[in-house]
Length: 210
Ligand SMILES: [Zn+2]
Image 1 (spheres, rainbow, N blue to C red):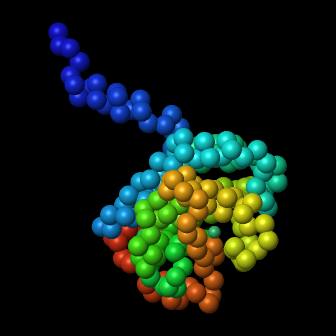
Image 2: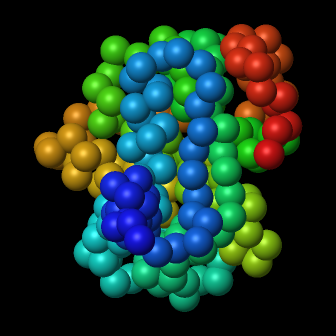
Image 3: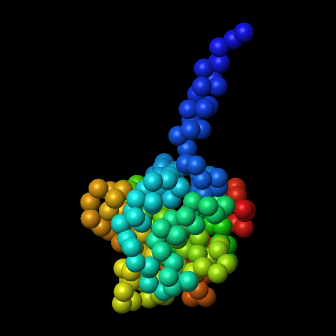
C-alpha cells in the first residue's frame, strides 16, 4: 500500500486551479520573442479566466453593432469560455505603425507587428485581446461583434466590443488608464495585403494551420 505520490497530488492541484471551461479561446506562439510569448500567454489567461469575466461584469448594456443586438456582455464572456478556438500568433512588419491585425482569409491567425515591440507586455496583450474579439466574431455563425472600418475615427467606436474590451483590458492589465492605442487593421484589404503578406515571418506553422 502506497500513499499517493507527490506527482499525483501536483497534477490534481494544477488541474483544480484551471478554469472549469472545457475548451476556451487560446493563443499559441511558436517563435522566440519573449514579449510575444508572455503576451500570448497573458491574453489566453485573460480570455479564459476571471480577467475577462470581471471586466465584462462592469458593463450591463450590449455593445454597439453586435448581432444579435441584445447580446449581453456576460453572454459574450460565455462565448469566449465555451468556444473551441486556437489562434496562432504570427509576426509581420508592414504596414509600419499598424500594431496588430486579423485577416479573415486566415481566421485562425492573429498578427503582431514587430516594429511595435517597445510597448510593455500589458499593452501588447491588450492588442491580442482586441484581435481575439475579431477572431471569435468571425468563428461564430450567427454572431458578430464588429467595429467600423474607420476604427477610432468612427463615432461611438468606444462602445464596440473590440475597442471596449481591448482598451479596458489594457487599463486593467497595465494598472493605468489607456496609455497607447492598440492600432490595428481589422480587415486586410487589397491595398495592404501584398505588403502585409510579404512581411509575415515564417515560424514553422502553416499559415492556415488550426
Ligand atoms: Zn479591430
